[in-house]
Image (cartoon, rainbow, N blue to C red; front, side):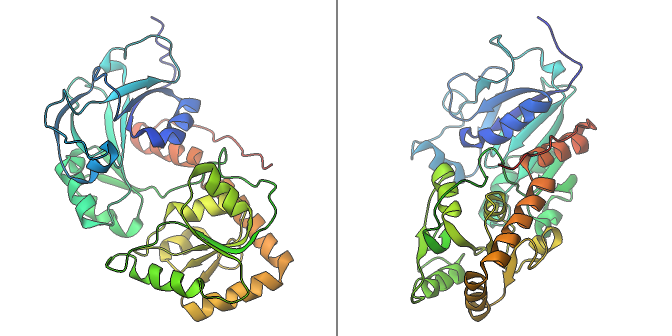
Amino acid sequence: METYKESPWVLLVMMPEQWPIARIFAKYVNTFIYTMNNKDLSRVKLINYSGKALNKFFRGRGLSISSRIFRLGKRKLKFTYRQLPDPNFIDLIFVLDPCRVNIDFSPFKNAVKAYWSQDCIHPSDYYAQVLAGVLDYDVVFCAHKQYMHRFNRTKVCWLPYACDPYLHRRINQPLRYDLAFVGHIPSPKSRIGRERRKLLLSIGELASKKVFIGNAWQHDMVALYNSSKLVLDISRSKELNWRVFEVLGCGRPLLTDYREEVADIFKNREHLAFYSSFEELTELIEYYLTNDAEREEMARKGQEECYRAHTLDHRVKTILEETIGFKIDVETVQKD
């Protein structure tokens, strides 16, 4: 078996829907993927299960500590042989939230173990990660700068979300909506996201405006963004979320509530527009709906900045450099 050791070997432990980042890793390094729903455990051994948050991915099926029930499977991207090579070949094991399980890393003597924590803003999700041994990893990447201190027992790096230009791009769509919000609408009893619900109810009452409020995924979401003059973002816990990058990647003008994390990487009224109250939001909506050229120029600059520094390729570059010191040149994104 030829080993191709001129580039690193990376083992990803992830959910199936996280395939975009696996595709990016495979562009730069030898990549193996273990997902949470296949039958073959292969060379990764789960020694227990912790936290109830993961149950929803199994449609309510009960999970046992036994690895016979809760398994990792594999999907090959780059190699044609059936089994993972000698574990000593693996340079990096990268586990993506919401995978929250204790893994027996003992076969991987030479591997750096790293975790990307994404939902640590919610206490129940954070403690599920702690119970899964995340604080014992060599490196933890935290998606939210204000919560990095929770992982101070190990090396911790800020790794915000990103766009995927393969999916998040400008497409030729008629502009059907004045304003769109794509995302979860909290229930009246929910403590998290109460401000989002209040704001969305007010937005829905705007007279003479064509507004879309609801859920959509993947290509449907991209189509909705591309058919909207303005796109609205409302954070649930003042966090920098995926939506910011998805909208900007689609080349659409974004109105978002002010957060310091967002202001650290995007400029107000150049890449996007911040609001701090419903009154300020309505003023921005009226302004950009009557200034088409300025609205589209902000959208163009927002996409350029997102493609320049905030694609999944840039995040993989950071991961490889901070964990195993492997440097890559990120491919330049060509806009459609």
